Image 1: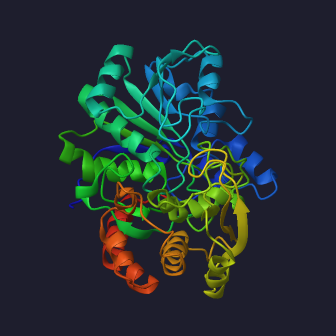
Image 2 (image 1 turned 180 degrees about the horizontal axis):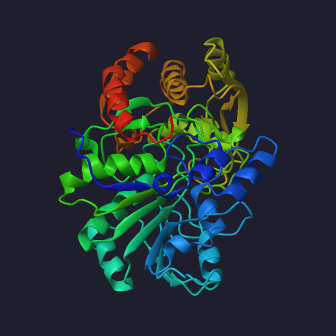
Length: 429
């Protein structure tokens, strides 16, 4: 893929040197001075999301624009107010809001959304954007008069977490109607390192539209830059203007627990930052017959099925996987797979997020489970695992008896290629 350079603006281009100095952020970052001070005053506080910076300015950057907001419950300020509520209170109501998977207010379960409705709190028209094509979303932009699409959603860093693809579709829709796009950036809760296999375009789906790796290690703003240069031209369009309002104070080697921010669950089954740490790996259990922990108090940390026992935990713990601890666990899911059926399995706990590799851990769990329980472990009949991992390679290698190192090694070259490509679009160094 060639790097296609397009016009984009960052908040840094609009910020004063005094604000940059107050934030302590790297070159090109911007922060509102009051929030830089507030972040410094919190225990461990370092990170100031873009939305907080613009709210501190009274949202003046939106004056005169017809703003449509792609967001969900994670579009929230440090004081707990949602950005749409804040915009309305500031006298700058959006012309529309667009909800991704789980909905604008976040009440829907996996694969669901909330439909179209008039938000009772603000009177803002909410449109269900989940599953729409770029042309369908462009029609809604035209209907509502959007000239600026503002995106503010916390992503958790996995290719198969659908919010980044809602962003991509919104960007593609914006090219069709000549709207500008502004991404209010937030930190990647997993840090900034990339891991895992690349998506084969032949396996493009709602859980992976374009060829990026499984744990991309980028912020939404960085991904937007990559999308604009690498993928939108392939879909017949390009943005007239892309603005990235940078998060202040984030470092690529930091995880959410070090941000000083309050966690807002980005979806019903990602209740804590601990869930986010394991999700890029254990999320692939959705492609197996095993329960991925939906219907338990610790989804994606608790994994198992009927008929499993203590042996899985013993073998996993013996591997000495960095940053991971396994506990023998028994549970009865209240929804999802095996509702009301007793299951055995493990709970994986991250003991050191800087050493933990979610994808290697999950690969080890699957290879070990297939070895111990050949009559229990199986893939989902629809081979959804191929969409999650990006190709048929992982499934076929596991079925052929490949070891963990062989499987991990099979994608190292493409991971290195992606890492080189993304260097062109990284904002935070």
